[in-house]
Image (cartoon, rainbow, N blue to C red; front, side, top):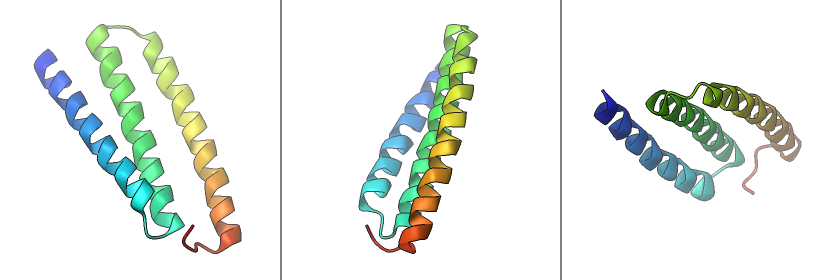
Length: 89
């Protein structure tokens, strides 16, 4: 079970780096926003997997706070994109 969780955390880390590449090279601001949201979601899942591997429950609180911050950041960025009209940045 632990080996599967470690493999899945490594796989998530690799896909996070792929999303970072997409966020940097995105063609429009909306593509970048989606990539940032995916990075946030995968990071939350990664924190929860690490919490399960280490059997530490306080990481769940960290993941919840990170989710709230990620949600507020995506709202702010989407309002910012709305002002620009979704043009390439």
